[in-house]
Image (tube, rainbow, N blue to C red):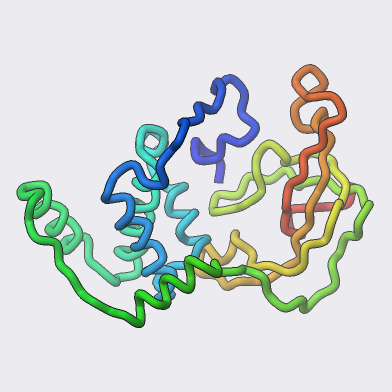
Length: 226
């Protein structure tokens, strides 16, 4: 969706500030949020596209002023409440308890099978590749154009490539479609391509680096012949 959550290609935001010797986690609570994501994914409570779409529904001011793992926590809470796994009242009551007494004992439940499943998921990831059931519409070397559309739901079609011309560089195979998977409308696998865009096509002649090419992975439904 369009919003502050998709800043790729925007001008005037300044340099990315890189933190020297940045730790994996800045606070202890971030470790718990990291584990919580894999516990929910590993148990099939949410999928990765629902996770991303939830973040995109944060208020822009909150999104831009909050930390990375706050985004994770927001969408995990939102997904679990929406699916009825926990209630809003239960969540609010638990949060209120720890605001009033930060030193209150945390609940502890040992589940070795879940721990093993989470460790395996973290190690191998959760590939979204699927068996190919249709032949790719486009071939390597074929000129294409990214569709100039503005979906209201989740999409991986970045705004800075919409309406821009490129060339198919590689056919990756078949993958889950995030636009439908995020909305509970099924995986609907389709081919994904690496599309090569000349930098001047995306940024304009005055802003592009000479001879620079940008490669963007795009689902087939995002593309049309050029």
